[in-house]
Image 1 (tube, rainbow, N blue to C red):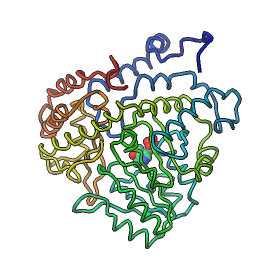
Image 2 (cartoon, rainbow, N blue to C red):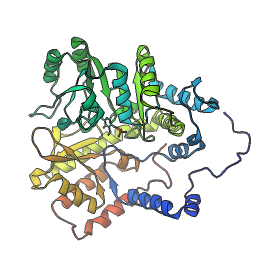
Image 3 (cartoon, protein in one colour):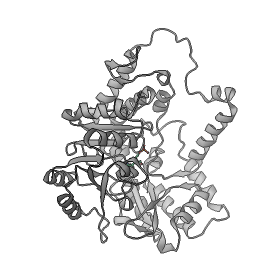
Image 4 (tube, rainbow, N blue to C red):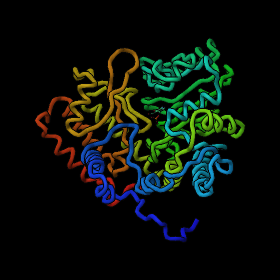
Length: 424
Ligand SMILES: Cc1ncc(COP(=O)(O)O)c(C=O)c1O
């Protein structure tokens, strides 16, 4: 769509100077956060640095538009152009993942899961999902979440000896419980999931298969992880992790479930779509379809493997002995440290990561991911250095702040938004 007329307001772009002039307090916070992101090592597995193009779509006048409903069937007028943006987003998502239907309106990953349950389940239905201690997400049956309150969840887990999903246990539980749905997907499982095995188990017990691919969906887009779409009834995902889009959710499904899924998103669980985010999702899907993203996704995995090896060399116990993905979990109890103490020490050195539950026992561990540092352009040599830095900090080195400077120098050699090298 060519832009012809000069816009009456041309100062809509996300321009720090405009923000600084009008609201120095908030501009200062934004700049300080940019500084924090740029001078530390961001190893939170669910985060990434989205591109300037995605940020431009997020900070665009599409944020002004109300658009309840779907393209061609809106409850508001003036939706002709945002309809095109949503059609671009759904078309690109379908092509990227080989899906018959895509809904790009969920405001978050949790909203996508809520809508998937609303599409397929009734309150009180039995659902089999990964136990929370073993890596299930809050939306997989936590009593603190709608899922645990409204559905009857049973958890499956990972094997004590290998840390891998116990498919025999999943099959046995499915036969016994005959759940209405089986959910697979995790916040911390570092290995590929055998979607064909889950499909077989779901078919045997007459259950729907819901894949919550919030974490690996970006690797799927880049061909670095198996695609759940051919196996699942419904795939839920986030767009902001390895996929590197705006914060948000998405649902992919077979054509025959399209109506149920769409009605479950709007009007059942959400109101108006956020069209600036929908447009930014379209931009991200476009970026993810480019060959450079395939290289990026494979590098994310290569970096995670290198980092896992470096952590193991520092004496940390890496769960499952390594990773197939962007994600690593590790037990720090061998260093006589609580995970929260370890996270605090690392944060003081500018290394930012999460604490996570570990299966079989009460200890917590650390969860790391390589999506963000790979976007910065770091590769295996930097992962080896990061592993050594983590080992040194956890053993008590640099508590006088000595390693903070080295972390800042390493991060600063791979600048985020100038001159934008890594994104396209
Ligand atoms: C497996 C899984 N499902 C759902 C979500 C929820 O996503 P959001 O935080 O966008 O609601 C996450 C977030 O990390 C996740 O890892």
